[in-house]
Length: 331
Image (spheres, rainbow, N blue to C red):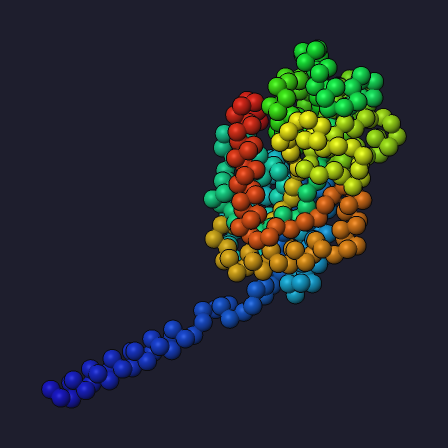
């Protein structure tokens, strides 16, 4: 009997010792410092656009800061849904990230089945840039200020039209928000892209539009378009003499295009914090900031992953409310 008890105790001791060793042995990869291989940033749009350019510019200093190559991969299609779905389903390990813009927070409010929830399926990393839009009109329009434009539109109901690059796009959303703040009901003329929309405002086929400062600046400087106000909370360094919409009397108006980085939900906070810190360092590089400011783009970063998540949440709720009130839907 004594031998059996001793044998049982010996087996138990061996089992406890084995469990102790296993508990102290890290799982595969746990001892490695993130990142241990290249990181991929998926861009939902074709190369050459604002989201792509900013993602590629930030990827270079990120590669240096992380000690691993940061690869930018374009996956355009379905208003950004192709890339968004891909990243939402990726392993939440910090190696597959999404370069997103306003559409990320807007699309779920405009279509019945977007296939993702911007708040539940993703974790915020950081803002990467802010891009103000500018309200431009045909120079022949007898309105040189926002106040005069609003008065003219109210005096001529149904006659003032605005162009956009398409339903649900940044220009469309900015104009509908302007309508809500001013009580106007301007006629929307959507186009399949920005280029033709600008051409028709210049020719007088359409009265006005909200456009990114960078793409309208040349036409403003040549006198083909007249700027009335910028949509950001502060004036654009490229148009310092042009007031904001808020300064022009439409109090509380603000609609700034933004870009940022998101990760799949469930990504460890330590990884999100590391990425946030590296983005903050990347966007502070003087030469990079100067180059983008010349294009009307302000590189910036969020104070924390949680701050960016809160920013996206506020944008989503704001745009969802606007879509309901304005009846904006995408087919």
